Image (cartoon, rainbow, N blue to C red; front, side, top):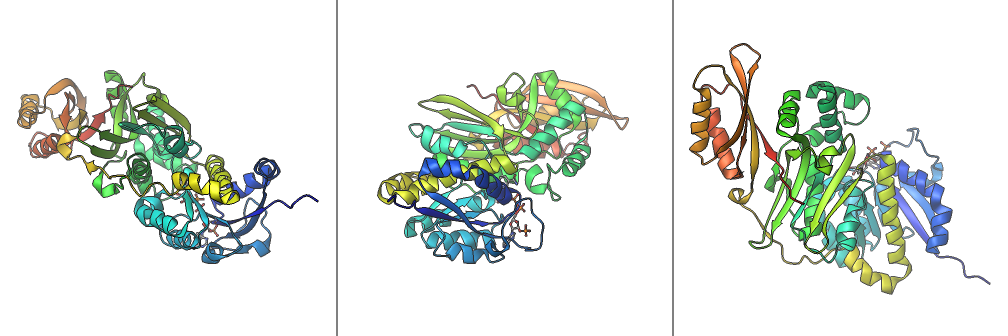
Length: 444
Ligand SMILES: NC(=O)c1ccc[n+]([C@@H]2O[C@H](COP(=O)([O-])OP(=O)(O)OC[C@H]3O[C@@H](n4cnc5c(N)ncnc54)[C@H](OP(=O)(O)O)[C@@H]3O)[C@@H](O)[C@H]2O)c1
């Protein structure tokens, strides 16, 4: 008689956008996955906040609960997908499931960024596993690329577009010549932006994802407050015109750079001028892109849907397949698991680069009074901080009596630019806080 297949029991905490996607696709492809994996997959229980809410997937009422912690600690459940979001209930659920030795699958970059060290330590201590492919860049398998495909490499530079909402807004602003607020409103109507858009447009969501990538690549937890984080809300259609005149497009990028000579790491998130011929500059709409420079493989580039129900469910299900491998063949899997899911009792963490070591070229846009001698005053203020001007675009500006001054600089550093901005803001002829953008000359 044939031995019955082992059953892997799955609990899904949170049946919102992502949770329903996982339920839907897993139900659809389950027979195929089961025959490939040699196990039965059972969607055992799911938790929600509101049992009466109608959902896009059919879940038997007896499988639904509002008690996520009961799923996390249920001895019959092997794999817990935490798809609730936030950092309170999600943290409790994650830690409880890991403490019970389960595999936890997460899409929650905010949680990993805030509590990653505690989560990995709990997984290590109790023999649980934490998988998080869906937390960065949705459908792009960037976590596996860094951890497995590129394991032979060190990573001097990783950069990319990690927030589809911001990329959609920037693309629309450029293509439609439309102001930020109008495009943001439209993005909300289309469901691309949250009602409270601040996490996305101010760069914090990108910073959470950058923290996850920096940890994977450099074994160092970098908190958003230790990064340079700037959003897209001060960019105007005029900035796109100036950028195009200079040969650039504008993208919100996360940039994770490590200097292996000084062993310094910098993580930053900011709108960046990218040469318009650059592949990443051409990635538009809600798509994400990540460029990874490895010291062995060279540069590899990943482009795809960074969010949304289907792309994110695809990443969760890929972790589920890894979870089955971990659970199925305990001893062999344990070895891969150590490598794959509880990365490193960290190798040596590296130092964060001081501001004066973070160098690039800059774009400065300011509104100045339209009178003789203004450019000389601005140039003098910049020269006082050793910032030299590479190009100038000057144009008339509303209201009358004001002009727009756009400068690019030669290479300088963050410390000098901060001092320059403070000095410029004190000039009487500078009428509002200048906008500073970085120029991304990433030679690949
Ligand atoms: N949406 C995306 O495209 C995307 C992409 C990548 C990563 N993520 C991440 O995936 C996670 C889930 O995102 P989402 O967009 O699916 O969120 P969502 O649509 O708001 O869904 C959250 C789910 O959690 C449930 N929930 C909330 N509080 C709960 C509680 N205390 N107990 C039990 N259930 C609770 C909600 O129940 P009700 O339905 O009853 O309200 C809902 O089903 C987040 O960490 C997010 O950052 C999302």
